[in-house]
Amino acid sequence: MGAWFSDGHSLKLYWIIHIFMEYKTIYQKIKQLRLKRKITIQDLSAKTGLTPGYLSKIENSQ
Image (tube, rainbow, N blue to C red; front, side, top):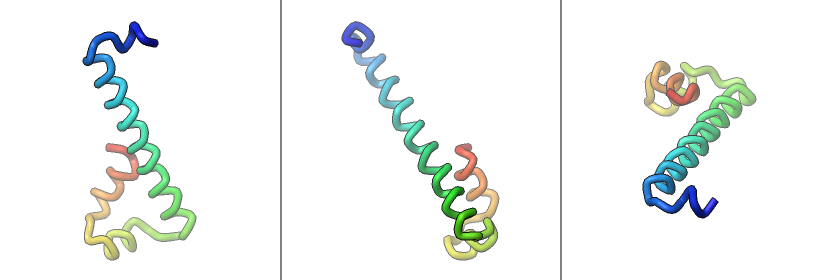
């Protein structure tokens, strides 16, 4: 693994991918919790002030 990280660019790319995957997991958990609690996107929109379309994009990692 040391050779793969010998340049700074590979290390930065690794962390970008790692962070992206963490956020994707968080977004999926938001949707799981919403569905588990039987909250619609419209209800969540009303509670957060975010549009249903924007919430959908968040949940689908877009």
